[in-house]
Amino acid sequence: MQKLIRKIALLAGIIVLCTTGFFGFRLLAHKAPTPANEGPELVIYSPHPVEITEYIVREFRQRTGIRTKVISAGTGELIGRMKENEKKGEADIFWGGGVESLETVKDFFGKLESSEENAIRNEYKATHGLWLPFSVLPAVIIYNESLVPEEHRPQSWADLLDPYFANRLIMADPEKSGSSYTILATMLRTMAPFGGTTFSGWNYVERLIVQLGESGISPKSSLVYRSVASGDFYAGITFENYVLSLIKMGTNVGYCYPAEGTSAVPDGIALLKTAHNTDEARQFVDFVLGYDVQSILLARWQRRTVRTDVGEKEPDLALRHFINYPIAEAASSRDAILAKWAGLYARYHP
Image (cartoon, rainbow, N blue to C red; front, side):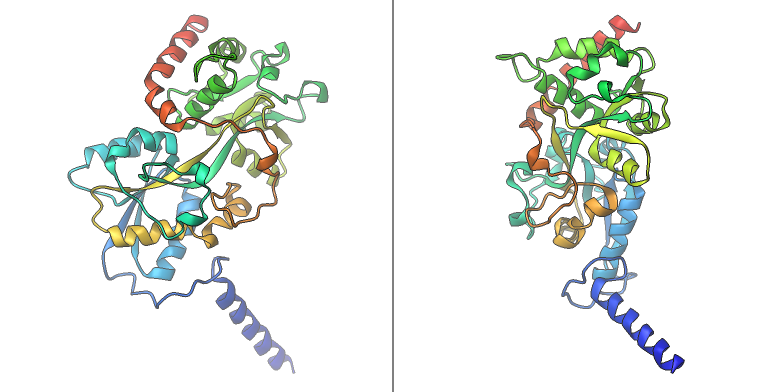
């Protein structure tokens, strides 16, 4: 009888694996993959965390048999490498990095089409079609619930100017962090005076620089949420996915979507003009934008989907106030904005 029970349990386990896929994805109907040691090798530049790239690429290889290599580094470093290897054509795909950064090098990309495009939210697409969005990253304020009493917990950008947060506030250096530049541009846009130009909220940013103090600028965006979680700082400015990850780990942090408005800018994926393996590249793009991958983004990595047909259980973004973030203008204004930021920061923290 026990042998029979073990056989039934084994059979049930095999059925579950065949139904869900080894890594928790639904299996797609496709032809049998070719052996992984045959055929061309798809090369991907990616600044995404290794836990994301390894997981997704491993499943892609298993489903398609396409040999795949990921070159990992920061967005800026990979953009520099792409430029250096333009003639050589080292890689086929650029996967990751804010679309604002991708916009600055769009001339290096080829027209990108995907069979999944009709399911992608129009507000996250580029009209020129040189990149497609992968996941959405809302900017938020994070605070340490153990250190910040209820009456001081921020609900708006303006709340960060409370004297309570003087020298207890942290953000990443926008000159070194692409994600922090997005945050800076978001504040300049959101806090612009009525009738002002797109990025004219400098009065607010100048006062925020004073609040940050000499130690409130981090060289890395990851240090922002870690420093708030550890209690080294009371509050900071970061992205939603990092805060949700901390909360799922049981860390005592809270967060808010600033009442004046904030941004929800996607990161993206693009096909390089010099790609050698365009067919394989398009299969990969379809895969990462497909339902299976997009449906696990939030649960596994706390990233928002770009699809219209994937339900999410975290706070409904439709209830939040998001600005119409001008991606192209933020990209073209980058040098001027950063120069002004550097001048202001040097004035108060020489």
